[in-house]
Length: 566
Image 1 (tube, rainbow, N blue to C red):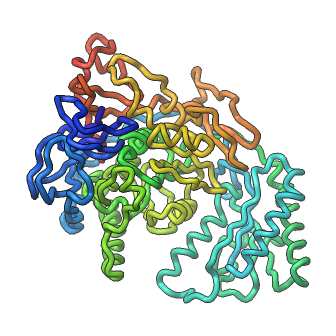
Image 2 (image 1 turned 90 degrees about the vertical axis):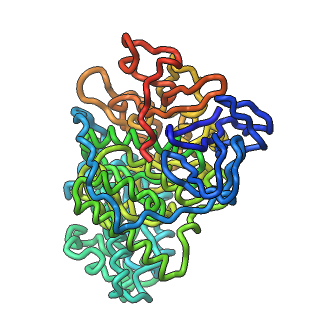
Image 3 (image 1 turned 180 degrees about the vertical axis):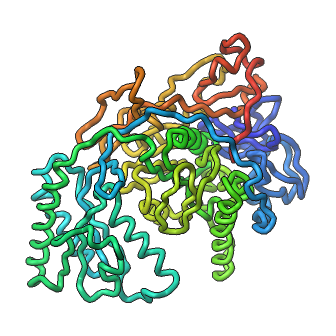
């Protein structure tokens, strides 16, 4: 079986876990000419030198030699096309119509005094400078071991340490990025917007400079300067005394129903493969649409993995100004590459290529599927706090932890997709890990929460429905398999306040819940299947209303499906 995403595509990716051997007969009489691994591309027709190679209905490369139908389409057979020119992009020319609003959905969260909403209840130890980092990390270990057990309603203790704050040109133009990022993380909603702040005393990044007008909200006794203490032991004791007092306050907090509109969800992919743009990313994109319809904020990021698909995003910008803001962030990246005499082709990793991605163009087209189909309402530059509702592009680098750190300036929940696998996680927010392949979900059962690989490997019969685990799970926190607890992690579930959708108690210690999704995830592709022309469906889930007489029919009755959003 192979997957052809768009009707225009002249390549497809192979689904067979073991790949195919030479001579294998595939859909439409296609015969494999050589051994081709799973998730790699097979030519569906003869390709001449200079001919465009199409996936997602877009050009991912130009053939640099003849490629026969059934051949393995590898990186070395393609020349990478030029990036879309930024001065010739359509601006807000195809703004998607607003989807029907989903009302009455809530989650169990924490209301903060500053108006923010938390999904966790954490004691934060923020810092102003790298000099105090080891001391604060040691204090955090002591607090977790000696004090935290007495406060069962607190989810954990997080030391927000970094390598900044002194020995740098604090007034340089680029300094604004780390400073505002650290400020927004220090005041994170999951820290109740009120951390303890530990500084040294002589650093350039003084507390007043870090927090500005927000400094007074910390209150007396919540700013600790180690140079005011009498040595190491007294410094640790001062931090622990302040922590115990703050833990007592946090322990009195309780979850309460909060509108789904208070969710700020950051989306990210790492270790992508050829399946990422077919399974996990479009499924997350559909879930993003549901969250937007419920009033939530959804952020997608990674400038380096958006640049080559920017021509598909600027038309979706809600306004011309938003489209120009998107271009501004892409132009910054182009200028950055030019200054460093680097090329955008350096983005793809050996793991990306092992997983079937030929270049950054193909990777970008699959990456933006996470952004769903709604209008892009705003753009936030690096480290800026997102305030808009709906779908937002938050500019970040593509490096997993740097992207996640900058998204923490705003988000209170995180969804991370991966094809090759990553132990990536964040201490401050719940992280839902979604795999593109079933093999990865089975191999890393204690790291992957949701297996999106079933989208590609479900029984290819249009009339068969598979269990809607993924659809419920992305919005509901239900897992495709029992979730293995990760220390101090918190899962969320979305609940509809009326009707029959109610919370279900599957919450383990230190877990709390988002209950059921507004509806099952449904996104449609045309899949090439050996012995049949095509079939459609995510998990085999196709609404009966899309078939004549409201029934699920055989393959010949499958409706024409919309192309991938890439």
